[in-house]
Image (cartoon, rainbow, N blue to C red; front, side):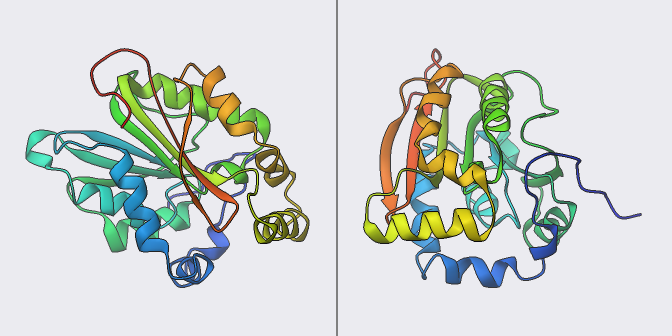
Length: 224
């Protein structure tokens, strides 16, 4: 019996699962590989780390992280998405012993406190409303070990006229007020309110995507 998608207020992309791996590279204008590599580098992964990928889609970023980990030493990348069809594609194309995919809503994680060394999210938070953004960040804080790293790459306050155009066209074309929240710049404040260290801007793409890093206070991981 096929696994069912999780009931969530966030927008899921079951309908796009079959074409996601074709469409995403086009939307990223051929820079998806460099973008993903920048994100992975900021996580400061050791081969024994466990890392959680929120809103993983078909799992390309998750697998890129898993390839840097050693399952024999406890290393594992776990990708979660509320869309069961996305997870089915991820498992088929990219799952292995240290790259696992779960049908899970990011605002309600089924993992123990302090069970991950790093949490990452790429282009997920503009799909969820303000309350779910806050709840997801609280859950991310809970499952991170003290000193664990958080890396979020998502729509943020645009920095170019093209970025402003793409952001607002996307907000109205897709009828997503959640995008407007990101454009207003809410993510850094919500990260800090969840208990993370002050977020740092570590990269920008296309005039509207920003990469942030922060960490959970304590421990010896530290942000890069």
